[in-house]
Image (cartoon, one colour):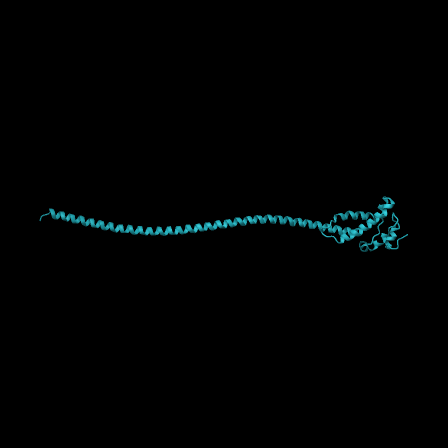
Length: 215
């Protein structure tokens, strides 16, 4: 006899079930969230391989599994292990549950998770490269800083050398002018000496002429 507390569409199908419904828990399944969203008409034929006393218990377990899976799928997060859902869906489908909508949703969630995992891998690789490049950039900055100091020191030395060169050039010019003045004065004095010597010679010659000449 059909259970008056169980949904009519399920009662019709359950009349051909491979077990007799004796458990009082069948009625409350009508209020389960999974069956409210997606009414089901499971046949539970695979349970014929079990002994009769086990069939109803396994059927109740499948009912709970379906409703639980619908709820878990609806509440899935990125860290929810949805891979196991596929296996559960396959088992439920064998027992006559319509799992097409749930499977489509689960497969879409898996694709999104896989896509996210790939993107995370790309992101992590980019971060690793970024850290590596940051290290190299830091090394280059340190080298540039040192080179900048070296260049500054070189410029300082160049300025010192330029100042020394300027002083040397000034000294060279001064000494050159002094040398030229000295040489000019030497020439003048030499001319004076030569002229004086000539006059002396002339005077001496005149002296001799006077001395030996007729009085």
